[in-house]
Amino acid sequence: MRLYICFTTCALCCATAFGDVSTEHGYFDLTERLGAGNEPTGVGIEVAQVEAVAASGGYAPDENNPLFLGKTFVLRSGSSVISNHATQVGMRLYGTSASGIAQDIDLINVYNAEGWATTEYLRVGTGSNPSSPPGDTVLINNSWTATFGSVATDTQALRRADWSIDQHDVMMLSGVANTGAHAPLMSFGFNCVSVGKQNGEHVSGTIPSGYDLPGRQLPLIVASQGSTSNAAGVVSAIVALLVETRETHPNTSSNYFAGLSETMKSCLLTGGNHLAGWTNNTPISGANRGRTTQPIDEVYGVGTANVDRAHRVLTGGQHASSGSSSGLSIAPNAAWETWTIGHNQSRFIKFDVASLADEVSIVLTWHQLANSGFGSYSLANLDLILWKEVGGTLVDITGDAGLDVFSAGNVVSESAVDNVEHLYIEDLAIGEYVLEVKRIDSLGSSRAFSVGWLFPEQTTVPGDVNGDGVIDVNDILALIVAWGPCNGCPEDLDGSGSVNVSDLIQLISYW
Image (tube, rainbow, N blue to C red; front, side):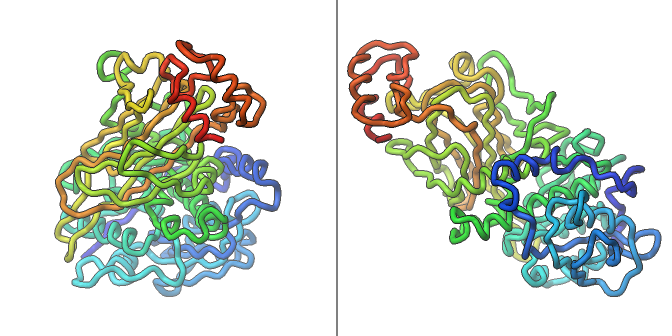
């Protein structure tokens, strides 16, 4: 069995220019928000780096590089001479100085790609399950592309990787091809995160026929580097910072669900920064305005990876969803939910938008489950819908009904093939909204999902109708004065066009 491997490389791959990683990917923003010295650095995080064998005959980074001072490398595929490609990717993933943002990663397990795919980890072509990740490895960086030359064998490898992600809650970051045609390994995986370049100069679009569920979109996210190899290294570094955060932050450190790879993936993707020209081809007029079957941009995925935005989502903590759309508590502006959902069921989350939200990002993701022996798989089908709540009733805001509610974007994401759904909304009006995670397949068992959301920091306090920053009896008096028809006034908390008892009950709930 021969694996035909390429670097995810280009002419710039071996250059030492890093791009402005800290600025482009939100690290400076994170440091400013948390305060210098309080930001995560990757300390205590163990990673794996899988590399194609270079022209030199080696797969390992240069351990004597001054940017790797204090790092411990475990060569899982045996002794190796230096690979410049592995060194360049390592600089982005765990290098010190200007090269990386996860500078305190200190333990790196290094594999050559063929060994990792066959005898040393995935065990393609055997009757055994994949190996467990070594030690406390939390992420695997795949800055290479490959094929076994057989769709059946490639498919088995991908299912094995998806199984490993699901079973061990390890994240896999996989670069797509820079040029030419798609390469299936490893970016075609359902549960991995496929990575492209912020300039869009990579192979993109949909997974071709012959592979599991063709039509799925990739890449899922991009980074500002000259090759997808190095872009995958940057996104891997961001994931390492998020893992450190989940293990140390009081909102996540004792939460089992924060440790699931579904949660990490949804937080990472929710934080994607949409640049000019981003589109998921949502109709801008007519009955389907705000509704799309294409969750992400066909070139840029969810956009540029941003550690500050993803960190906000993760540290917002878990907010419980409900099987009913009534009696919901208000969710934080940035947070996530990871739970299970049965077929033909829905879960609901409520938001209060107290001031115009110029940009809203919501991402839902769930896993493909490979069946025993890796000869088949199963995948639930979930949709994502945002409703406006008026007087306790959920109101559809697709089509003309949403013209006064949001200026652009989508409030429904309903792909039939992707295991990612994404809402990206511009200028969401003041009011209350309910998010529905809806499962529409007929599979029998419950499945886990994770959804993250990022709303702007609100400039007003929900229920503070007199604007003094406190919700008290003065707000009740102001509400009573405005009792009756009231179009757009702050006392109309539920957006019904009238101040009435439902607004009074809602104000009391904010007390």
